Length: 392
Image (cartoon, rainbow, N blue to C red; front, top):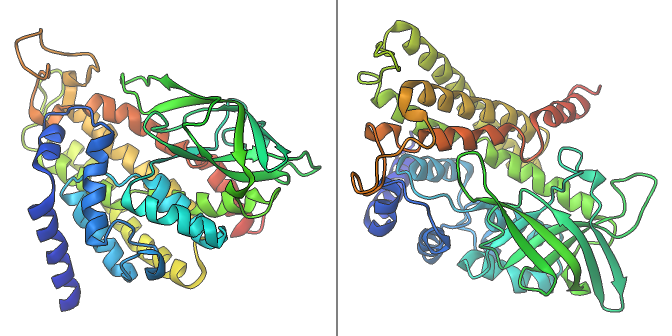
């Protein structure tokens, strides 16, 4: 590796070691649920350092890193198991605003995204519009200098923490359903916005349903042109899909699995570290190495032309690998994968039974099942590839 990159990697590693909040690390180590301020604590430290938005242009607060530095930063954060910088503002909305937004919108929203002052959520999916996002029915009717918004969104991650949301709404009905969709920025504290929790199979509250009832949204919160929001939506999804691939996270999780190979066993006590299980670990490691090189090629392409159908390829393979790693984690944890297998009250403070490497394996495994669905299901990604790459 280039000496300059080695120096950069060490500087990132040293910064994390010196500045990562001890209280946050302690909560992660004991498997506690993270709250809004836990996520923002690390966000604010990176913002102060100028590192919170690796891919942003320098004129809007980006660090000016090249693709290799961005990759190194992601790898070091993953290896140190830092909390994720939530993508909704930094990775998703930010690029939309500095690409399609007005001068006023850039000056209003980009600084508060960087600082963490505004926490964003994504209002895309609806009960009848998931993979077929263009079928959305949430309506926005212009009345004077406001839009009146009515509808329902679902699977809205961390909407209970968010003070702002970016929403796809239908402002007109056209022959082609992708037309007539607009991209609105909505203050989640507005009258008529109701957030209701969705508790997932692992007992976690990350996602929500959002109801919009006669919500007034200023016209100046429209990004781009009215009825042309599908352009913004596709641009945002391309950025989201690259992130969902989670190559650096997969590298971290695979290393965790490999560290425990000598000690893991299944429910019958049979040693899972025998050649058959090791072969399965090796197979996924080989696929992950190939994906790492593919990611480098995609990042190089994005520098020249922005995200394209390659992001769909990364999303498919990346999510499949992440799910496979957690399937092996699940298998390795044996009987401790029971999601509600807890010690009696008072026996252990955190209620966890079993070796440390089995902590939260069940809930994480269940949570990972969504990866092949959100951001556009993998079936939809294959359709995108067939049209954009193969011309079918």
